[in-house]
Length: 409
Image 1 (spheres, rainbow, N blue to C red):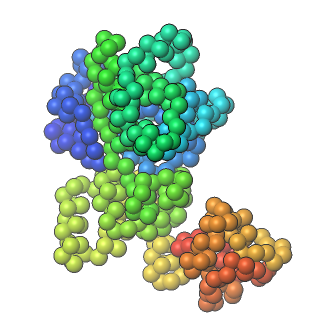
Image 2 (image 1 turned 180 degrees about the vertical axis):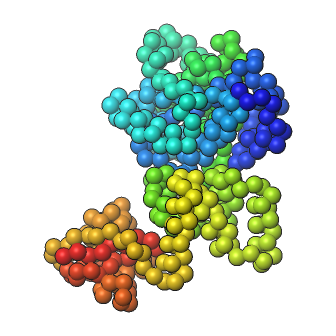
Image 3 (image 1 turned 90 degrees about the horizontal axis):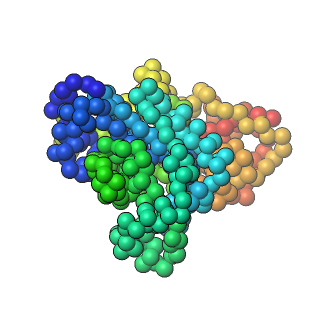
């Protein structure tokens, strides 16, 4: 445990990108003193339904790293037991249960990405099955007795579903209680998560005193919006950046972010200090600084976090060359086309759109162009979903703002 963190360090930890700190004065004291002189156990519940994470997940991971730098311990609990029930968090429908094999495969991939940010040596990994496999029916009924139906309906997504007439199974009411019991089993001192997890985190805080433990402190993080600048980043909304995305792809997507969302990305995903961010805001509002230059700085800082400073600089150069000088990328992947094919089929098969409907929407919006003579020629916009793409060796197809393929016969 780091001795005597400064007030500035503690302020940064508890305010940067943070939405809520429950009993902040208590947590400030613990950060200085520890738990009876021992490092704090900072818990994160991991949902093993994911196999590929977005930079939105990294917001919480980076906060854990800040706790670790103060000498505290991260305790990650893999929700391998609750994943078999399904979890409605942030959804209008419950998640489908997973098999043990699916959970284990997802958890392994999740942790591989998690440890790109969080120090593995300061992390304890636990699985819910360690304690819930020993639960019997009496234990489950006893746990249910600690909350009422009215209290459970205070959770936002349950409330919305109930008012909309969408069914809620009794097993779903168990999920917050089971997640809360994780805090009891792990004797956690602090639990962190996104704002969508506030209710579940507070359930753990309520349960611990019942089992003779001090109530854990709660810290929730602001969730960043997706590339649309409006809705929470999510794969289902196709407004995300994968944590494992190549540097150039990540940089280009970050540059497409609406200007008003830049500040939240800076705060959640970089270490650029608040004073400098405030200066950016002031100079942009006074017309002294081009928002594009600020966005370049933002994208460079974030890409460096997930890759390296050198790769971030290279990605910026590629972006400026492509979009400012109107040059095409130099690393366009090949797409082998042996016979003429419908444009929609080509776009989907090449992985440039998730579905035929997405491809048709891109075409309708004017987002698909063909450079029949390759990089040296002009582009032709494709506006008809019934367009047949001929086999033209070396032709380049552009889909959206950043995606290209080169036709190979």
